[in-house]
Image 1 (cartoon, rainbow, N blue to C red):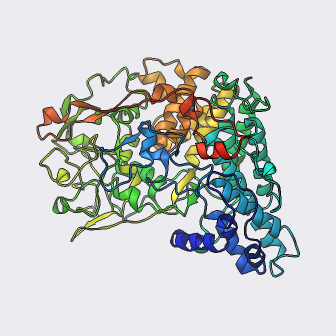
Image 2 (cartoon, one colour):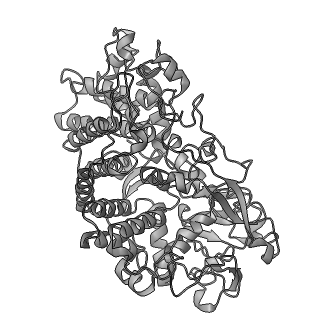
Image 3 (cartoon, rainbow, N blue to C red):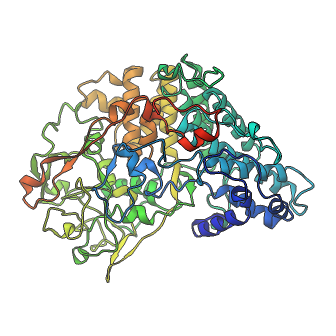
Length: 640
């Protein structure tokens, strides 16, 4: 069983079956790949029931990517910001976005502390060694045994992938060392990036042959691994490996092990993009083969809403609607209560001082400008609309009432925007439709008014004046007595739109902007209520030839990913693999002056922080000094 209510049980199983992780002889900062408690391991594989508990231990290390206080990708880039000092939320992972990473005690250290993924890999190895031994677990049938082997192989590969993404060259732990192995054998060196990629890719290929096509019982097995999930992770791995940070990066040409082994191949390899494109297409085929498709809000008499709102609800639902048909991998260990509580606006005037939820996650003005105009092109390219003065005041008219409050004055940048802008962002003067709409329709529904003294500002509003609306499920309700109702959903770690855009990116890098590149970008745009790339750029862009070149299409694809996957934790990793973080994360975090009641003062740009990203140092995490002291075979990442 692996579902939303099962998280605590899984963690408990980690304490029982995972004694092999935390037993005697384990030093902090030590890459320990030997099992500690043999007696516990022996008991764990005496029966199917006990063995399954151990498998759940292997699952228990999956990161809680839907938890803003543990996932650095939410607050670590330039998408979301908070007020400092923080309110009701830990600033621990935010230290990465604020440039406070260090090597003495690294933030979100997955290498050598009690949260080490090497512990997870070791547990996977223990499980595989025992479950592949047919003399163990005598009551376990061959088909289920085969499936469990595939799940553990996937998890082992995935944990290596997460380490590779975060640290670059890693130690590969294919099997555990004997308990009596000498200390010298435990001090293992890092392996070249290409070797690690091949190892992870091959392990995923092996796992795929054993995994089921689909999960048939969501009540008991939602979140368990199937073939589409494994193929999707392989696609993400190979796209990352083909990207500029890992593929022919001259910044790491002198990065070597102590024995002189080069850890990065300085030569660009174009075939990596071909392999990445093939992997993306295979993952898409597998996902679509079991009915996965881009989520659209159904036409139903239950909801009396216009097409404008229906498009937006489909876009919101692709993230926050439980069990929607677009999500390939729902991370069921991550409930989203905190994420929603930190994102929701005070939309109900009767509950303006409700303390059950305080929105602190604030989309930056930079991200606000990333979304297209209503014509489907970047704001600085639209030849029919001007956004040169984003804070200029304008009054919403009747034709705009499903996006903005009719007759309300707000900033020019909030007008004439694409559906993903209105589905993703809440803002002063914006409409925020929910299932408990007071009118039972999208006419006269909930709205946001956040200038000081207005009902939406009674408690606290995000520091920039914007809310990440897309992260909040439609059933969130402000209740009496400072209570709230929150509909949890499993965090969508991978959804189909992500794969479509990865495939378009890989294919464009391999072949240029061929027809199939357009096909998969346009699938995402069509769901968002936009015309095709060709039609939009031809009719509205000051640079109509942009989609006809590889370089122009690359820029379009990267902005499409930024928009479609906004606030979902993808940009943090995308701008790193694109090798753009040095440009994107050296700038000002800005928003409106939300302490003002006067509209002319409210819509003045304020700088809250100046980010600093050191190149190439900050592209990868440092290995802690403790690990470096214990294992003299390790070399530190450049710059640290």
